Length: 425
Image 1 (cartoon, rainbow, N blue to C red):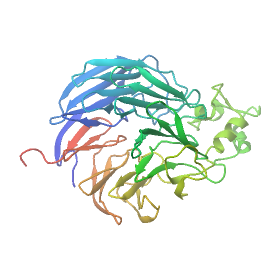
Image 2 (cartoon, one colour):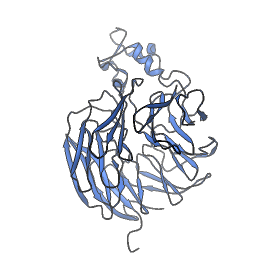
Image 3 (spheres, helix red, strand yellow):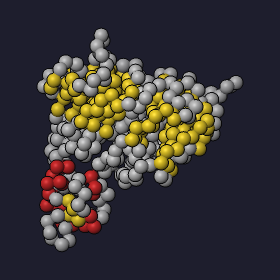
């Protein structure tokens, strides 16, 4: 499929920047964004791209976040009519299809450096949201009709922020469970009550990609290593200009993630803080397949297979027609058997070598991978996939596309595009 700003374009609508993804429901497309102190929920007409409504709420606070995040990076959820948006600097707000506010639930403030990014999800009439932070992490269930909190579970084991959105698993003949990938662990909770049912310990660091459920398995991807990563603290002390045995912010000017290590926010990095971060990646890493179900600690019994390579940690991988597709930095595409971990093919999209934040999507026997530079690689879906086209949108792209009704909706830094065959062609 060939498309671009001038090719197979149905419509283009300028929208404010955010990394959140578009969500299609019926004849509407929902988006979130932030402009200054205003948090936006936007509804576009799916057929024309015309803005139907825009609702603004004021930020309750302004929390600094890392440069690769923003104040509206969580994607909205929808039940087909109503929309639910989460903003870390406000909380959750719900609007109906015509933009009338239904309810709001203030949350926070949150202790993070990178900012939050997990999106709310729906299970029936229950809205679920995980907020994994450096302190006071929690999972919350909200009545989708009223905004009333049904239950809240404190995730006291979590000591660092996570960004993976949860997924709902519905075991045959059993009530639904919500599965949450957090720092160093995977947990399953009963949707009805919040009871923690089973868990896996010993996973590695940096959960961003969401879990995937496939035919009796849950697949997760984490970043890690077999030894502590990065330079030792003694090496870091080479920049300790005053020799006080700690690293001040102005002594680490080239280190833009200083705040991630300085968890107590006192302006200094100590050896214990540095070593904690260096060791955070120790544990099970790569792509891991878990057999869900049962009760209690399943760490030693539930691993079906693991591929101990650092695959995609930012985009959520995709299972389409029984093949698992993974996109890595540099345009590396990998296809695997999701049930066994067998690798079918590894190759590179040579015209799209950048970073990847958007998750792949698929339809019509095609899989779409989008780089941060707006290069869209389209492959023929198969174990031995083949590249069909590489399309250039000419703008930065971080959001995962949406596919509906034979059309592809892609959000770039400055616009939302709808591609496909226009009516009458």
